Image (cartoon, rainbow, N blue to C red):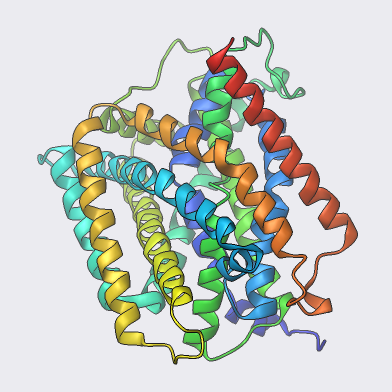
Length: 421
């Protein structure tokens, strides 16, 4: 395979950045910051272990799409309709918790950053409607361009704030996987943390769909090296930013006696306050805008991912020999997006007073389902349809299998504590 030039690799950037935008949402701004505030740096190694064990499952989304030109959903279908059914059940179980969670946080940040007088539910309505309009009329190309700019803004602000807060961090509790004085009840928070760390494993399907969409929109079929370069940029960025938010929470709130508020507006004010303490009062408006920007990118990615998967599933049900009907695909996409927006609004109306509850529910569901998706991804990479150069090596397959066992074991332990403990 011809070695890709650096310029070609940068041109291939897109799906990996979208992945990072999806990750740097509730998992980072909320869960990572809460982890630092509650446990200091004690959970850093556990977060790192989670990134390592989930790595193959996410990478396989990019690798399968690049090698075959199809999304992971085709890999699931080749295993049997039961595999597609499992994905559909998981998607339905997570979509109506994930979208309300990130939208509520975005609305809370917007209310604090811009001093809006409208209630959180009203702001959420405008956010969902605006993001839906961007996706329907702008398509993948506009989504790709917007997210790149938004991610750069927040990344620079977050890394700068972290560097300035480092002198205030207590490094004495950073050397173990389990925090001192660990109580089995801590498992409930840790599951909520790791369920969204770096993000839900079913996002690997979106990663594959975005890889296919990028190739179609750019009229360039990227090589595996180009696609993996894009993926690694997004994956490493997600880890660095997760670490930054843990450090921010640890440096400002750990052992302070302060607790994060449950409502979206209260939490947003505390989050922006972290930056103010690190950078100074002048940084409040800038950080608020940056945080709102990246959360909007997360909402955009989420609102695009589920309908895009619905279109792929719909087309798979049709005769594959039939040409792709772009008009029909757009109708299915718009319809699925509309349903997602309406149901998300209903969920937010019911849980608008407790952002933490919505996020904990969403992340717990995602954690419990993660082993199933990781297992399906592992099996997809054994498909005879994959060319030899697109298949993972033995070491990566062993890491993938170990990740499935690790996630399944932790999920079983969590269920044991919930049901019998």
